[in-house]
Image 1 (cartoon, one colour):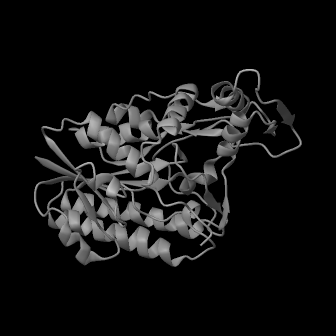
Image 2: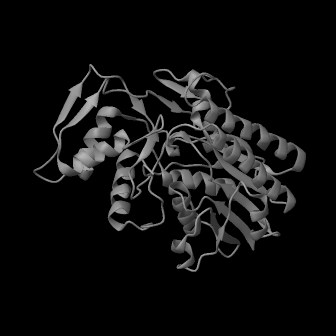
Image 3: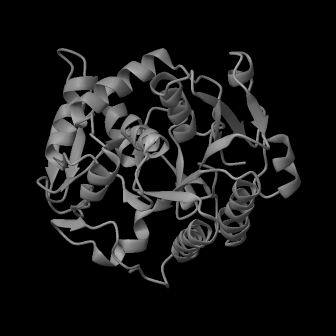
Length: 336
């Protein structure tokens, strides 16, 4: 049996990814192990192997399997969306030192594959209306921005991956992510250190209540809205890939949707008959993002085939919301 360890399996993206792998991998060949920093009765009550792990504590890796480790998916990390206030040290301690600890574990147990996420913001210097951002462009970002230390931590990890790939033969993969959309009980995130409800969730909530929704800026701007189950498919493809593929791969779905259509479809999916939201256009407000990540490499080298356009994503989001399968697993982003 090939052991596959999902670190961060009690996070939003981690839970959906673990669930997807359980239902899509050949479980007669693979043994999935969930891992995270906190206790997770959700897994243990289902009879799923769950191991508590603090990536910053190298000794805690002794609890993980020491042989037959085929792949490690590291979804642990700190990002601006999960940080109240601002403190640069967690970016170094968790993203860099934690990733190094995981890489060292992979080296010591002769793990074959290591998969991690990285940020799209390292290429933010290329963002412009209508742009399609290639996966292998050199870094280009504002080193004086509010998010610079986060981006630097993620870029450092990419350099570490290349080192461990070339020196120790570990096949390393990084998925360059924008927002990975999924339903969670807690709608909150942080922006510039302050807790907010993201704009897209506010739209869904207003659509459910039949409240007026404003369309800011140019309603024709288009971007990819990528569902967590397409993200999980990329992870699966990386695990089963038998090619020489390695490196950084963009997350996207190749089906960009305009802001106007995003809101109209959200009203259609979430709205109640006879009580649909009124849509008001506000061209005086700032425009939304208007670029996509080029997924040509992801499709060509991994065999990735996106399944969820915007409408099918929302329909499945609504289904997950009603079922609330991961109830109690996630820790809300509170003000404490």
